[in-house]
Image (cartoon, rainbow, N blue to C red; front, side, top):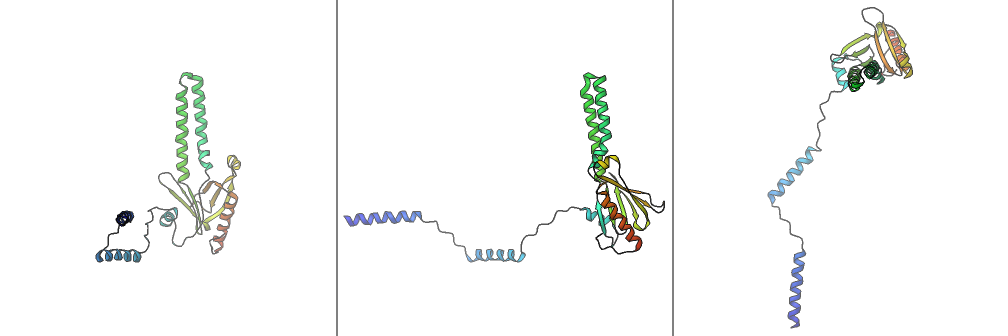
Length: 227
């Protein structure tokens, strides 16, 4: 009797052990193995995936294609200071204040109209100042001084370095307050009109760089890319 109980308990034990076992994996045939191996070899041969760079046009590419000449070296490239946007918006701010005050005095029941008109004037003038700032670029190469300006149609004005008579650093009152300045490039003849780099940061250093570039160009010196 005891032997029968032991044998039945052993059977139940082994059945429970079989239920706890992990399920067997399906065996992959030789065709499946060959397909997986060929895919692995193809991935290894092709190497890591290369992501195509986004199709963007940088400023350097634009200058190289449309402005720079063959063999021309860029020595300096900069934009006006961001204070230019505020300086261009100040007149509109003054006019907007006058409109608001006048509306307050003469039309007290329609003050909101004066405020809306003033805000609209300032916003439009600020947007135009931003566009002017974005379309302005100053460029110094080993051959020329280039100024690019314009909102919808960029205008390129350049003067050969050997045709520059002199340069002059000027600062207005508001530029002096912000430690800014403007540089006037005066050519030797009337064939090239004056060029002005307006409201730039570090005007003393920039003016010295332009002056030395003009002197080297007139002496026929070689530019090493470092002034």
